[in-house]
Length: 437
Image (cartoon, rainbow, N blue to C red; front, side, top):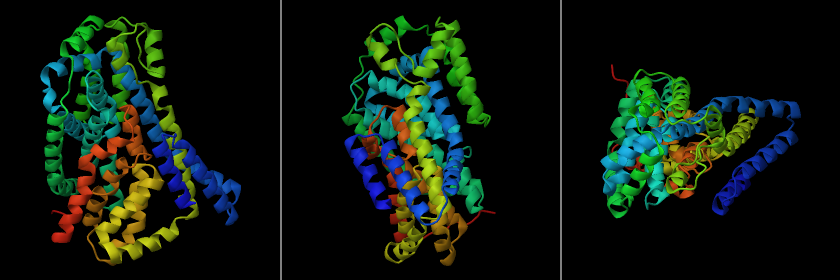
């Protein structure tokens, strides 16, 4: 069933079929196996329900992302940033600009989803206004948003690694910065080359003229974005700052852009759109809670499946395989392989980290390895590998928000350069990272 579910997932990605269906089939098959092994239906239901409860936080964030992307469009915030961005950004360096900007913002916000739902949305509107491959830019954006997700003090992922390994957060962050320097520098070079090869062919006068005629570009329309940035500096939880930005965006849409309250509510639920057919209307349309419904269904079934797998210990034999792999490909190589497995079947970054940690910690203990090295290896594998798996919500959510397809992963260079570079470095010069006094 494990292999069959994996094949179904790969086929669905290849054929462009909604991955909800193979995940749901996998859930049913695993439930049948557990039932045949003596688990009662009520027990299995409670396991699935327990997994679903864990997904509620992510569901809430998805709702906020859908709402904020629509509110920013309706308020003119996206138009305002695009208007001045077109004037300031060098089109020949746009892909590099997207990667660096998303890296900075994700470090400030500490959230990949929050970054892609705000800055990522703005960048993608600019891409749709020009002649540039969406998936190349999406790859650069997704690589950038996980820069901060991996090593920001406000990142839930960084804090999760610190908690489960019982290590100091800021020591982990220093270690992660140290081991990401080479991959980041190489990524800068690659995105710079891609930028020159694929410049943003933007009809500047056209998009600027359309924006100027359609929206009131008073500086007040930038306040929804400023709220996010200012509250991030004060380390306010994204679950507070995003609703504040949504309310501000809705108010600006009504008071400045002269939208009706009813229309704004409709935009937040169904997505922003303009009644007239226009060049600008096509590239500005989108967002809304409805745009996240498909991803929410994937999240729910993924967590239900993970709840059943965890509760029944059906993946216990995998740990035996992992132990055997250590002797063939080394500890870090085994960590990479385990992260791929956990990310593929856990279908979320959090579960990938948890499952990977559970399956490798005894291996690290038996080898007498420092817990800070375990924490670092988790940050250099499970955290960054999950977004590269198209059906894992770490990659599926940003891709959906950016309207990209699965080929975005090809261009997310930073994410696979981190495990690759560290694998090479560990082979050449094994290093242990200890707590700094």
